[in-house]
Length: 183
Image 1 (spheres, one colour):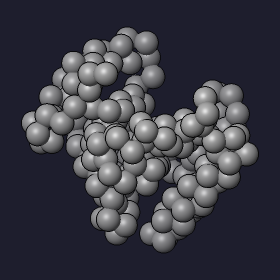
Image 2: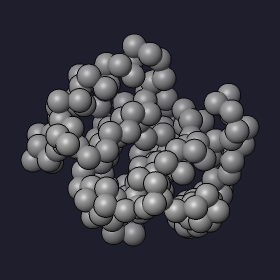
Image 3: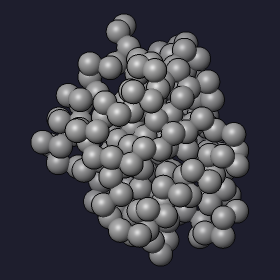
Image 4: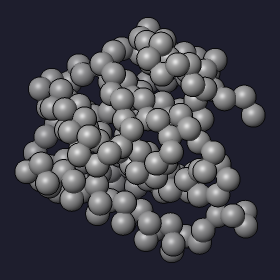
């Protein structure tokens, strides 16, 4: 499409986004998030030394950058995610869509590091003036709680990145689908 930037421009924007986010984690005294091999092919962004259940994939970041461009990106007002880990994707959405409210839910079932990841997300969001609301809960049962807190703002982007099983992802999609903005 004509409104999509060239691949080299997108790669540069993904690198700039990664550098910004990495510096924020380092500002908390944490290691620099880095890319390491993953079972998804290519690599994933991880926080070295911490078990947080996962990390963003470079093509997730590329998709986010591409979505943020053009008419759609300027129009998006509500982004809802399931799964936070250490907040990398959550913060990326908030940076790329500064006019949008970002609501994310995480069950925090992966231990102390997962709970710390939620705290880091809140701390970084507050320090940089990002509109991020992190909710503790289990999907799909607790999905309605998000909407009771955001005034039922229709979802422009749904990012499902919780438990990666077909059944759970379908259940998460089914819970979010009725709240999507109608085209």
